[in-house]
Image (cartoon, rainbow over all chains, first blue to last red; front, side, top):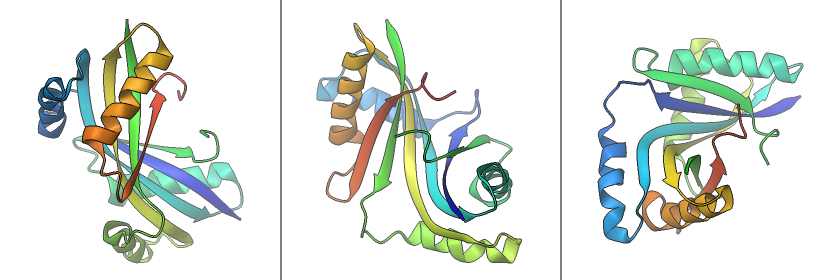
Length: 85
Length: 85
């Protein structure tokens, strides 16, 4: 069966995030105030062929660490795309 | 109060996704088979100052459409960072 999975890749704490900082500086000029701690990341949606959801998530986590993220500076979390509507 | 919010930006259906296609082609060489429909996107985490969570999500959605995404080719969804553990 195919399980839809979302892999979210975020920068580890303490790693500089120039993209997030730039967004944060741009927001007040557009009229959005009170927004802090902006962090930019990546997300991937994929369908994984597996026997059950746990196996699909395990496979997604392994893939996230091998190909989708740089574990030195990034965290990767895999979750089912069904749980979040 | 500050509400942590995640904004997820994904390409609209039908829009070509060369990054996702490249990942999909690279996976078998790393030993990951049975993965299809890979779509690459962006995610942003931010803290929003608001009176309640609904107001924070409304503000995040407006921001997502003005600054974080290109509504012509991308969908943006804002959700509370608390709901998903």
